[in-house]
Image (cartoon, rainbow, N blue to C red; front, side, top):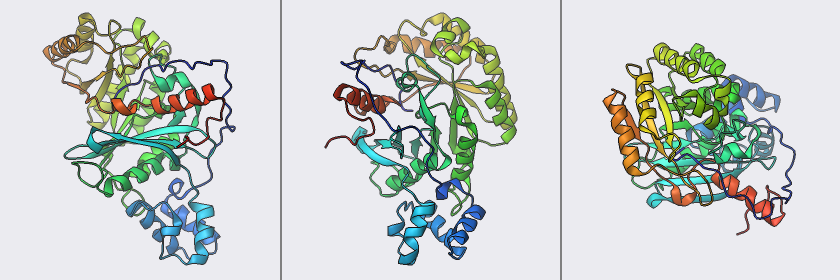
Length: 392
């Protein structure tokens, strides 16, 4: 997402019980199905098969998510279609914007009370959606707000796609300041580890990149899938023969530190993870993005920059340095700017292309998991259900 998150402050009442409905997958939705399956579904409802294309055109072409607004459908058909193919998957419970309207974040409640987030980021030449693939995350990275929540469940294909369709509609409305009115990029860098929800994420990618009206019609080259380094899934991704960008959340070039910062490294070490990433780059011709959150006095030492430079020299990869988004009360803090500049200098000197991520969204808890963490913390402190709507 725009800025990597940190651990939130513990609630004042740590023994408070947060109640929530049992996690469960949502009902079937239009976006779970390809066009042939949609035709079969509408036929089973007693509707003519051309309704599948009508529905798809509304949903993927016009970003209409409510059947009541599909006025070319017979009124008698709408209730049946809504119940069977267009159930409500995402309910917004908080929306915030900053950067003069160019960054917009939404906290969603799912049908079972789980919470996820997505962000829309507008630039002069593009609009990017950052979406979640899981409610919570099971990777347990200690500096990550989502990782500290633990995993609630995987999202369905449609829950992933519906975030994008909603955000595409926001972009099309023209409210994203100074940006074209079209969603053009999607990054799987929100809540969750995308490759831990592999089948649904890959199917969501296919739905997003299939031409309208069957899908959203985005370019595969404008989709980024991130991972902390699940090597078997990375190698499985190579076999998909997709042209999406792979982003590897590395955060440390040495096993001793990465074992602590990214616990999955205890299973797949730095060398093995990088080998899989380089193999993906060789297979696809797509440069791998190495995500590296600079944390003060933890992973920002000059020798670690030099080691990272040696590991990446001559490889089809670039480093995306991420200024950590500090939260009051956390032990983790962003590296000072002089340290950041020296880290960049050493990587560039090693011949490794390096950028520093745009630090957007600080005033709206822009890092993934922060809004949801705040919502859960408030629920625990107040003794109310985590899936209750925010009091207005």
